[in-house]
Image (cartoon, rainbow, N blue to C red; front, side, top):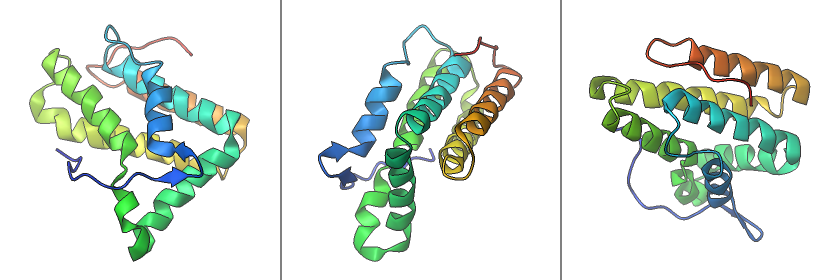
Length: 154
């Protein structure tokens, strides 16, 4: 699987444990009866709402992640791969439910991570309105993927 299972130090800003914050926000929209496209679309919605609600914190999370990759003294925090972990869980559940073939699990997880991280990274480069448009486009892309069923707007 794409996600490494090596435990790492958590990325913390002040009193905020950022990976936990993301996981809790996503956890509020992920429920067991949703299929994989609905769950993936829910994560994209959380990314957009986080960028809209607190752009400074969202930008910090993105910059901190990138800095952790470049600086040896921060390397331990690079293991906080929240999106990778979330999508691995979503894809594993989809395989167990027969929504996707196990042979496609790694590729599906990777594609979902690219979309999520791309949306997160765009938050500092485009307006909120433009980000919403891009987010909706990504949701449509997921909905139009063979094997995925469409869901309505958030």
